[in-house]
Length: 395
Ligand SMILES: NC(=O)c1ccc[n+]([C@@H]2O[C@H](COP(=O)([O-])OP(=O)(O)OC[C@H]3O[C@@H](n4cnc5c(N)ncnc54)[C@H](O)[C@@H]3O)[C@@H](O)[C@H]2O)c1
Image 1 (cartoon, rainbow, N blue to C red):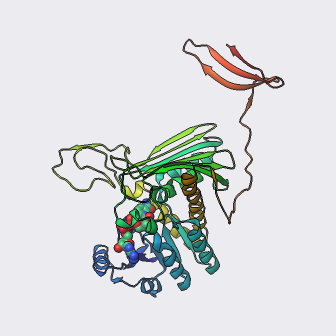
Image 2 (tube, rainbow, N blue to C red):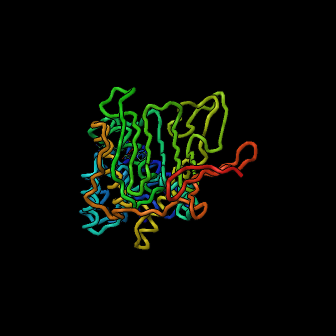
Image 3 (cartoon, rainbow, N blue to C red):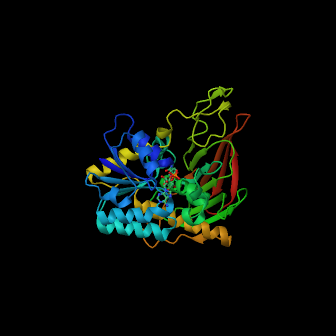
């Protein structure tokens, strides 16, 4: 694939590092940046022959086979619509829109035009995440009851993120989009998100948007998806997920604790890891950041999907559902009530049935709990099926 890169900032470089690494055959062939100096610098760094300050020119270039949108949130829609006009396949970074209305317009436009569209939600492609999904889909955790996803760091690296008009919000839109989609995957994308309760506040920074939020998404299966997002966290980038089911639990730590610990007096200085706040003392570097963050698996899925004519794991539809959940979170933070998730387009199940996880003890009793006590006794808590009476037996 010959890729046209739109944007030359932080994520464009992460994507380019991934795409031009490990002898991958899909290559960026040109870059668009509004600033000529930045466009040229990016082109020089990645050995590109072409750079431009005209977005349409990049999209319509005869060699462009797919467009990769790495622009600030308020520019996603215009860039997607330009790809639709040119009928060129498009990959868009997260969040898809600043709100569900924008995301819906993008979804409908790409579907009407019949062009391939992929949603670049990298954290749903990390090696740890993909393996967790296999275990969950294989039944190792039983029925999923609770997911918790946290992304917290000291705040983003460019002015536009802090401008609510351009970004669409603060930590909720920037980081919550990852956490919500992680929860949706664990709980099952076919399960309908029903309502959201969210607390949000501006605790530290002098901005209009929230810099800290905690939310709960209630799903039709009864599962709850918790998200914890912050631009006020000190100490680097905290990326952690938890899944709890009737048969098991998974805990993931994707960044601050990957098993790599280093001490330095700071003599060498330099880059340690994304959002690391220090380069001396005990540090937590990340071996291959792109890989730990899911970028290689994400692009492999996207290009395989394009080649074979299937859907990628993360689609514009997913981006739209995420935006709809986040819209409800913003509303709930204001009203301090549970707010329904407004989904004009819903392609999953209306009602999700789940198998009972209650176990029979004997013909008269259900088993509530079994525990081995410190003295070796085995205690069973039982419920009488007819009377509802609770009792215990010790073996
Ligand atoms: N894990 C991830 O998937 C991840 C991580 C970081 C950022 N992102 C997303 O990537 C997008 C870009 O974020 P970033 O971190 O690269 O930001 P950035 O500020 O580092 O880069 C943004 C790029 O857009 C250009 N730009 C800014 N304003 C523009 C304008 N008005 N017109 C044209 N170009 C303009 C900048 O010059 C720069 O090239 C955002 O949507 C962000 O949410 C995704």
